[in-house]
Structure formats: C-alpha cells, structure tokens
Length: 294
Image 1 (tube, rainbow, N blue to C red):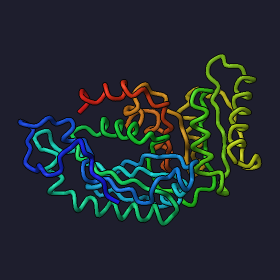
Image 2: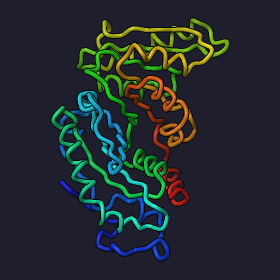
Image 3: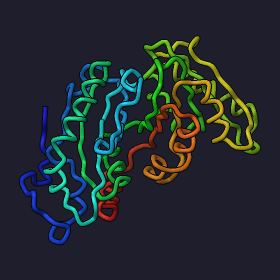
Image 4: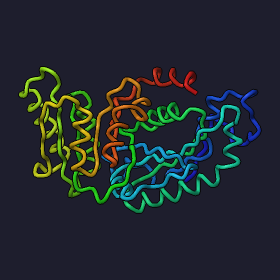
C-alpha cells in the first residue's frame, strides 16, 4: 500500500529554499512510503527491524545475497538522494521520484520474494546522516545494514563488547539466523586489564541468551582474545565469516553508521555488517535533535 505523511504537503512542487524551511521539506518522506507485506508483528513478532539505506539514484543496487541475508527481517528500505541546498525536495521528487520509486519497488520485491517484510521510504534530503538518524528512530530499527555482497550466509561473527546492548544484539542475531543453518561465532576482545574470567562469563551469558531465543547450542562458537587493536582483530576474524554483527559504540548514531568502526570493518571485511543500535532515546530527545540537523 502507499501512504502519505500528513505533515508534509504533496502538492507543492514549487517551494524553494528561500521561502520554505529546508528541514522538513527536504527530509520528510511525504508520498513515497510503501509497506509491502503488512504489519510484521502479525506474522512474525520476532522479526528484527533493519534499516537498509540505499542511494537509489546513484546506481546502487541490491548486492548479491542480501535478499537471502534479510529473509527473516522486517526491512526498512530507505532510498535517499542528497540534493543541493538551493533545491527544494518537492522539485527533486517531481523530477526523479517516479524513477527512484520504480527502482525501490524492484528491490522490495526481491526482498519480499526471499521472505522479508518491507517498508519502502524515498527521501530527498540535504543531509543524509540526519535523515538516516531520523529513520532509525521513526521505525524503531534494531540495526542498520552496511551492505556488501555475500553468498548464502553460513557463518556470522557477533562482536560482543559487554552487557550493554546484549539483549538487542541477541535479538537481532536470533531473529535473523535461529531458523537457518548458519553458525554463530561470538567474539570478545578483552580490554586492558579485563580478566579472562569476565570475558568468558560474558560469552557464556551471550550464548545462553541466544539459546533462549531459539539458536541451537551446537551452532554457537566462541573466541576470546586480547588484541592490541580490536577493530583490526574484528576485521581479521570477520574474514572467516559471511556477515558481521557489531554493536554501536560511538555516541552519535549517524557517525557510527557512516563513520569509523563499522566502516573500517566493512571496508576490510568486504561483507555485510549489521550495526546494532542503542536503545531509542525518549520522544523528547529524538524530537529535539531534528530541527538543527536538517
């Protein structure tokens, strides 16, 4: 189905940067939200919601194997296009919207055919990072996908950092892979003077949480070490796996999505990386962030 964001007019194609605020005009999804398969909580309440941002007008397409990787997810497929400051979103939407939506619907169909449920969003924005940030909160996304091609996922590396985020990490991994044949490797890099026993306990706790969520104990392996460079170590271990799951570590969601740790791992790993997001902030906090970002 197609819905319309009531907060943004869809019939005002001639707004300009001079006479219309660029924040909501540029970033609101307006008339281009499509829910392909209905409410995911009805058919599979344990489906993790994953944001998949894609630069739809810059030639990006679904990498090999991504549809199969997301078969058990509820995917928020966010096509976005960064427009010049002087260009109004409605102008860009009028000019490029139909072509962009056709491409997104093609990708959504491939994801649905693989088993995922899909929301499609098309956004013309002046600030991509702020847009991604907002969509994460709006859709309560458990993770953001940094896509790279993958064969049929047979092994997944979960980088375990600590108790914080454990629930969300295990929800994502179990939701995506508990019903598959994929093995799950839990990796914890000991930090500084952290005793081995604490690391072992953390891995045991994480294993128990995954088993409680339906992952077979036989499918879980653990690695504990004390590397000099944790990101390098994660990337090194990732080379033996088909996908990586990492928790968010940077105070800024958007910096993490487009910034250092996940990007470093994704570039070196060359496979898909799921970046698990922190708990959603309170409504007031999320709302306060938006006006200054756009």
